Image 1 (cartoon, rainbow, N blue to C red):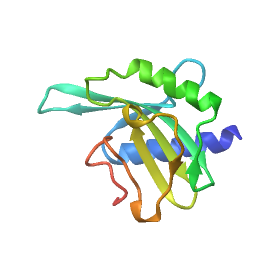
Image 2 (cartoon, rainbow, N blue to C red):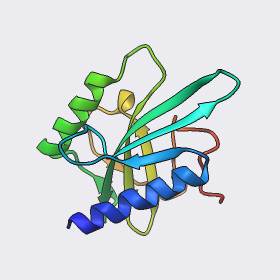
Image 3 (cartoon, helix red, strand yellow):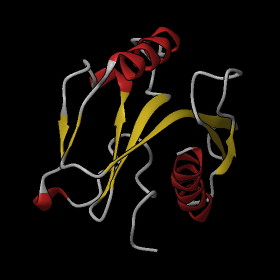
Image 4 (tube, one colour):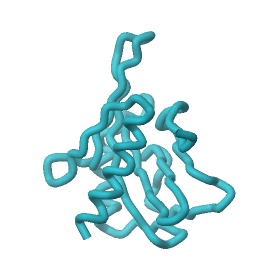
Length: 132
């Protein structure tokens, strides 16, 4: 089971790195997220930082069980309500694609995969796409 989670995290980490993010896996009890990613933005002379919790489902709907709701609460505590989104849930729908959603927009309600959506990287980065 852990191997499946690791493979999903590695897939997302590789996608981020193709889009010029530096990404590290930090899962376990030391972090509230599975992936820590950052990118230097030269025009602003600063770093863009993201904390990403990675999930995977074979179903067309992802449900928030009590453990996942707890993880969502932890990320919401970190996310400043008035700042740019830094905390995300990345959900891999097996044989379908990814949905990456800011925790600001999540309320613990089920997330459905819609075939017309394609991959959705909402708010993560305009350059982060599946066109590579």
